[in-house]
Length: 348
Image (cartoon, rainbow, N blue to C red; front, side, top):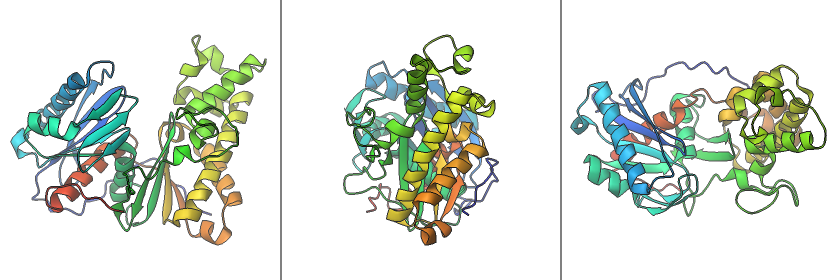
C-alpha cells in the first residue's frame, strides 16, 4: 500500500552553499501575487502579497509584480541588488527560455514578454516557469518528494494540473506543455471542459466539476447542507465548504466526492503506468482541504486501476508545502538557472 503523509512540513536543508545570495520566489495567480525572499537554507525571510487585478492591462499587473518583489526584499531587510535572481511561476502556455507567456486565460494575457519587462524594471535576472511545474519542483526538493528523482505532481484545485520531474530535473516537453494531465480524455462525450472539449479529466474531477455536479443534483431535487452555508450561487462554493460538508456526512457531497476520487485514482493509475515514478504527489486546494478519508478513496481507486507490481513500488503522497510549494520551487528554479550559466535550461 503506498504511503500517505501528514500535511505537517519538516524543514529540510537545501543542497546549496550557505554563502549564496538569497532569491525571490513569486507565485502569480489570477487573484493574488505572492512574493517571498528565501535564503540558501530554505528559510522564508519575508512574504509580500498583492491582489493581481487581472482585469487591468498587463502593464499594470507587471508593475504590481515588481512592487511585490521589491516589497519582499525590503521586508527581509535585503537590498534588491543583493538578490541573486527572481523566479516566477505563472499559469498558462509559455516559453520559459524566451520568458514569454503566450496565453494565460486567468490573466487575459497574450504574448506578454514577462521576463524582459521585469528584468528591465528590477535590474536582476528573472526566470519564468509554469506554476504547477514549480509547485512540483518545490515538493521534490523541499517537501514530500525529498530524496526522490522521478516524481509526478498532480494538483487538484479549480482544475487539475501536473508537473513532471525526471532524473531530478523538470521535464517540460517539446513545446513546454508537458504535464497537462487535466486534459486527458476521461469520459466519452462527458461534461464540457474549459478547453472546449468534452470529458477531460478536470471536467470530471476538479473543484468546478464537483460543484457543478452538486448544483445539477440540486436542480433535480436532491438536498445538500452546502446551500445552507451559502445563499449565493452554489458554483461559487470553495474547497473548505465542500470539505466541511464531506466531514459532516452530507449525502450529496459524499456521493459526488467519491465519484471525483474514483476518477482521480484512475488518473493516478494512468500516470503510474506511463511514467513509473518514485511517487505521485497530490496537492492543490481540493486535496489539501479534504481529510485523509478522501485521500484513501483516491488510493483505493488507483490500486484497482493499476498494474499491481507498479502500484506496489509507487508512493502516493500528500503534498506538504501548501501555498509555499510554488515560491520554494521558484527559488530552486532560480538557483538551478543561475548554476546553468544564468539562463533557463530546457530539459526534455
